[in-house]
Image (tube, rainbow, N blue to C red; front, side, top):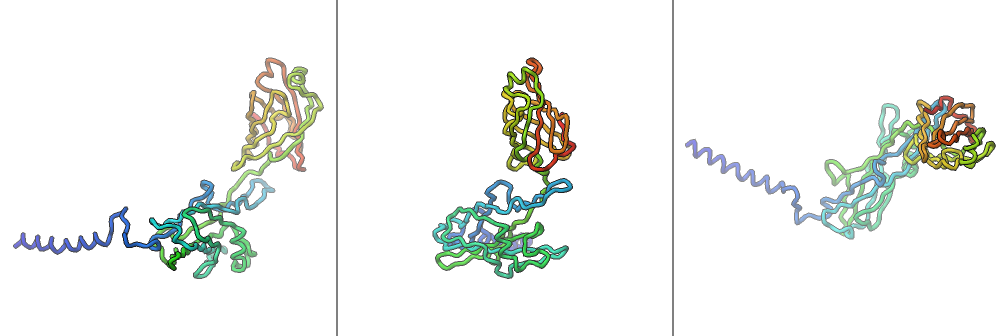
Length: 321
């Protein structure tokens, strides 16, 4: 009897297992009766790697500026239809919602439907979508609380949904017809502490001393003037490209200058092992002793001044090793 009971139990369980298998299809197999609207969605990838949020810069220092640095974000969008063709799609509507932070309270703006941000007609399977802080500001300016003054703040978070409309009349709303993750996309703001661009600009130089060989081989003269331009490298707060590192000395070159705002250390790098020794900081003027790879062997030494042209003074802690 015991053996018979066990077999009866197996017989009862088998139909149950089979019913589960028939409902839960193995991963990697699609339902042949499915339609594009069953799985349609969008996939977002930042067009610039790791740039997926607006950026607000706060410069270090007593008089440091605060400003929006990145207010437009581009995303590469993939229209995923699980085998269907983009030609089956009539349009994609992108709707925006805002989560406003007011102290410790949060207000969700946009209502149930959201605010229409953009419509893409007859989309391809890959396209670019741009999110603009200014455009979002215009959409929500009348909804923000008074302390926002109609403007986006760094604490605001924006959420985007998509409504895909097919040429067959089918409609997929990602907030209604999607479950789990990746049903909406959010954008916030990164607040970044940065060093002020101390070396950005074009400054005046003047040679005030030079050995005879420096004047001969370097093709400069005491009293000679000119300019040197420094440009902050994209994405950097400390490294600058220099048009010329040694005031047009013949055996000098363009190169880079690295500046540590906290310590004041200045380092240069270019051809011929050019070297600065900052010997004086007086308001807008630096006094710099120059040498390079062959200075010791050929007695090529000189001193030039570098004077700001923007009405500011150099930080008093600037120095070189």
